[in-house]
Each structure stands twice: as C-alpha cells, then as structure tokens.
Amino acid sequence: MAKGRVALITGAMGGIGMATARALGRAGCALMLNDIGGEEAHRARCAELADELGVDVRYEGADLSARDQVEGLVRATAAALGPVDVLVNNAVKRHYHPITDFPPDAWDYALAVNLTAPFDLCRLTLGSMKARGWGRIVNLSSLMGLAGKAGRADYVVTKTALIGLTRAVAAETLEYPDVTCNAICPGSVLTPFIARRIQGLADERGVSFEEMSRRYRSDIGQVADFITPEQIAGTVAYLCSDEARSITGVSLPVDAGVSSTFLQGPGTP
Image 1 (cartoon, rainbow, N blue to C red):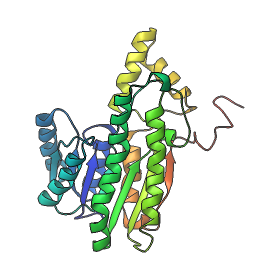
Image 2 (cartoon, one colour; image 1 turned 180 degrees about the vertical axis):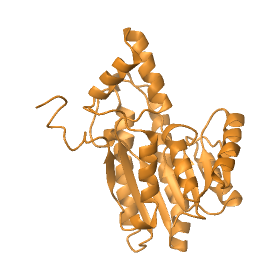
Image 3 (tube, rainbow, N blue to C red; image 1 turned 180 degrees about the horizontal axis):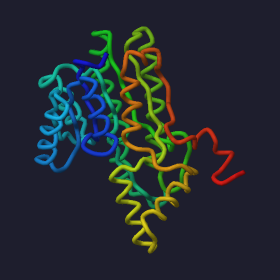
Image 4 (cartoon, rainbow, N blue to C red; image 1 turned 30 degrees about the horizontal axis):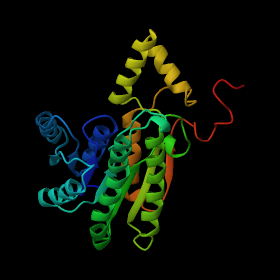
C-alpha cells in the first residue's frame, strides 16, 4: 500500500505533477516535490498542501540538467523523509524547432532533463527499492513516445527513450514482484503550459481560445475534449497501488483512443 511511503515527484508544482502530488498524498505518501523557479512560492504551496493532505510535504529546487543536483535531490529526500519508495519522473523541457534549426544547446538541455535525469533517479533509488522489497517507478512518456511529429524532435526522442528505460528497469526487477516500473503516454492534457501555448497561438491567429483548442486537439486526432491532469494522476496512483503489483514494463496510453484508432481518423464515418 502507498500509505506511509515516500514519493519523489519531478516537475511537481503544476499540471500533472501537482495533480499527482495530491493523488499520492491522499493515498498517504509523504511527498518530496521538485521543480525550478519561484522557490519561495513553491515552499509556501507545499506548506498549504501539507495542511490540506495531512502528510509531510517538502520542496527541493534541484536543476535536473545537472547530475550533481539530481544526486543531491535524492540525498535530500532520504535525509528529510527516508528512502524513495515511489518515483514519478514527470519533469520535461520541450522545444518547437525543425531539426535543421534546432539549437544544439537546447537539444542537450532537453536530453538532460527529459532522459538523463530519469535514468539517474532510477539508478539512485532502485537499489534501495530492491533492498526493501517494494517500489514503484512511473515515467511520464507521451503519445509522442509512440509516434513522431514534425518540429518536436527533442520531445519525440526523449519520450520514446523513456519507454525503453521503462522496459529496461522492468527487466531488471522481475525477481522483485513488488518493485514495478511503468510508463504513461498521455494525449493532449490541458496543463497550464498547454493553456498558455494555445492562448498564444489563438492571439497570433486571431481566433478564440475555444477554436484554437479544437484545432490543437485535431492536429493529433484527439476528437474528444482534453484529458485532465487529474485523470493522469489517478492512473499514476493506481500503478502505485498494491492492486497493480503485477503490472510492470507497460507503456499505457491515456489518450482518448488516439494511438489505437489512428486509421479511423477524426470525422471518418
């Protein structure tokens, strides 16, 4: 069970990360939340969350592009709360460039945050999970981990690689029936970041937010409404439950059917 466990969540202070913090906190996990920027506001929000959920909530602003800070994040979690039982690799950096125009520094940064940090966090926490005989790792991949899209090379590559990392960790933990590693592949989720991007596109094109939202979803064939962060968080919480102990190495689309019905196409009779 999750009650009394320690959960480390990256990219935790908004969108899917914050919804996941609430879901795991409600299940009884103590929480270490990692994000960057606005440290004072983040610490205040953690205090509010601790009061709301009745669990210990801590904040560490480690920059996941720096390996020494990733290592420090794990040490800080162990010192404050105990060894990590639940690891949710959610933090992401994304760019919008065609490959021929992609700045190499931006590519390197995205790979460090989106892929190397999850690897290092798995490397640094998996041993103690095995030693204690219980652990859950959930990697936030994407629909773009299952298919390509122009102008999104860093995102497509890193989200695809996270699926490979998930399988590799699962393969190394088969003899530990209560240590699992799974990936979730969301479709279009209306996070604060996506809402800001849609509003920007709407302003550029002189259309309403609602119209731009429809076009945004249509681009990936997601006919239904946006997926909510809470729906993704609920999936994370289930994968961390005892009931899900026999699910490992899976890449689970939560995408309103897009990845399994692409031949149908939006609006096809």
